[in-house]
Image (cartoon, rainbow, N blue to C red):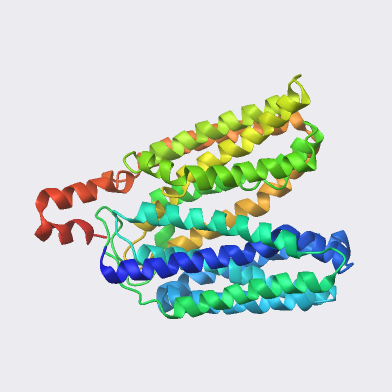
Length: 428
């Protein structure tokens, strides 16, 4: 990595932490704000959450093309300004129409941030530093969300509208501050590793769908997000309360255990996964999550004490966090390495779209099952977790040696010397 790339990466990480910090201020309190503080009711609050998902699904297909044509930085700055306007408007909105329009702007801006930031990380990293860069991004996201949520919880007062206006104003300020930081980033062009698909002058859905490895990774990604992230605040929490009798305080402890596991284990896990096949790492995550669902089954369907059920349920969230820590330096870099030269933005946007689809479908399926069909719910998602292992092993057969084992590129650079380095990393 060059000095310019390192300087740009540091600014990107600072910006990433700022955006997560701002989101942490408002995300946990959005439902309460709309339904109770503004007095708009549960129906409007539910529609706000739906608008976030719909806005993301609408803008993401266009975001990839914009990133390819304009570059990730201007697209990111536009997304940040849009999100800032949405956040500030949401804090001031008093009617259902204003709340929904503000939510659409905030949701669209947040959705575009993900692939734009990911593409900037790709452009400012090499095959040897990419996994660590994405691990750092994930670490800072969780740390920022946790710290922001903690501080926001001390500032908010459900009896005072102005306290929520303050939270949304701080969130908007964080987005604008990040836009200022990103405006100062000088974007170098990162080298690419061999084994990636051939370069293309312009991206197209047809070209992407012709990339079998990317299609398989997208299917795998949908199952990953559907079986884990799509259940955190819907099906799994409903199952814990209804089947396992978990208290709301214990549910908060479980969510904290998930974040703590990620923050504590991220870089220890990174050292473990860096020298292992990416497909095998993802397969291992499927097995870990299968154990997590077994623990959830014990919590809700076993005959142990309330304390044992609570411990098992908290362990479920902690095991999910361990799997997430393994995925962060694995999946996002693989998406980048599958993309043709100059097409990382398109591929990142498509993968973000897959994630949003899973996050929209997951709660819709898991919520009702977790609340009423306790046994089938656990069995269904245990099978999905084992399906992750199967799909990951299958994906490994589609990957080149360097895509599945990126350290081979570094090994070849060392073996061939500096003159050979360019030929090893420039193939696309």
